[in-house]
Amino acid sequence: AVKRDVGPNPIADPSSPIVSARGAAAQSPGSGMPSLGSTLADVCPGGWNSEAIALDFVGGCAGDTGDDESILTIVPLVGGQGLPLRCHRGLLRARCSSLPQARAAPGGGVIEVEESREVVFALLRWVYCEAVDADTSADANFDADDSGISVVASRAVRLGRSWGLRDAGSLQGRVASRRLAERARGSLAEDVLRAYDAGELSDGFFFQAEEGEPLRGGCSAVLRGGSSYFRAMLSGAWAESSRSHEGGKSIDVKVHWPRESLARHLRFLHGAMFVQSADDLRIALDCAKFFEVPSLFAHIGDWVASNLKIETAPAFWRLVEEEPSLMHGSGEGHDDFADADTACFEFHIRHFSKLAGQEEDHDEMELVKDNVLLHTLSVPLMHRLLSSGLVKMHTAPLKVVVKRFAKAHTVGQPHSAYQDLWARLRPPGVLFNRDHRDSLLPVGEVTVRSFL
Image (cartoon, rainbow, N blue to C red; front, side, top):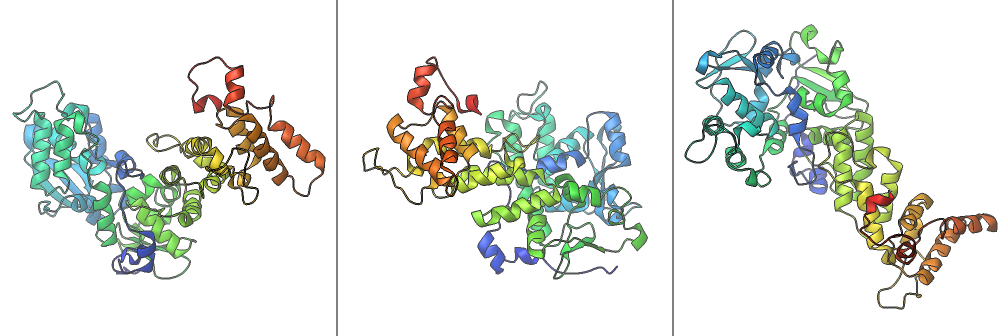
């Protein structure tokens, strides 16, 4: 295999029509994107006991690449605890603009630090995960400096500034007060994405899609942590996971996937937004399923929940219904992201009249007959709405709405099919609306989840 220089990722070129149409925003907590920190947490060097340190010495996030150039070993010198920590050189340089020059050594470069392991661990945890341990916060139960920051945290911030940590101010804000925890956001995703696009974050392999030039693979730890597909490909005894047979040279890995879609997926794993418009949802879902990426499912669900409109909500809810991975959240590790199914349910309850074609300026009985958005819902989804008893429409007009829905879904079928569906969608089969619910249920607080 030949080492390739394909330049910066073409999809990141600002002049590219792909970027102009899709955007190039990076992930950040609270912006509807899963954080890279959760992906990198498992490979973050460090620990608070000697056993964890020993494990880091044996492995580390870069040692598994088989490439000495990817490894940067940090040796804390203070306190006689100088066991080395193996780190990913490209990631540290992406996050820290003034990282000290490493001393050449067998197995990769070495940086000796006049600090204790606790301080180095605290900094690396922020560099990799944008996370701060409770022991390093202002409320920690040990000595703090004049600013109210714990001694370990204060020294970690100082070490980060000396290394040119790009979001040192955010780190200081996080450790200064728990009250600022939500506001002090770091730049992990932006730093990783910038380095990936510039070709500065690479473990020496490229992906050859179905067409076009190979795409830079980027950080193998990021790919393995975010995708089961890449975890299987880049771990263990598979040829793609080892470059020893190539003498350390770069290799091309064939991936049978369209190039543009693969390029966007690789950028997503390295911190970029994927879904920018409704047109991107199907592509994103295809990637999430093929490459087995839980964070992409979470991103899709979060985007759907944040972009519901009268014109698109029924189609979005049908999409969620058809994709089990989008139903009721996206699984463990993504609890902070919206439940797209619940969001769609609540939106349809809140805007039921408009979706049913009721004009705001007319009497409740005057309903639009053609092109009714509510008719595009599946029968199970309509049944859920009516079963909840939360619909804010009086019984007479609601019966008209439901009859028209039943007729729309039984076109070309025997009249008995219409009668059967109409019977299933009216009391006593469902609570129907608030009038019926209030007459049948005790008065009290009722939540949407009570009927899911």
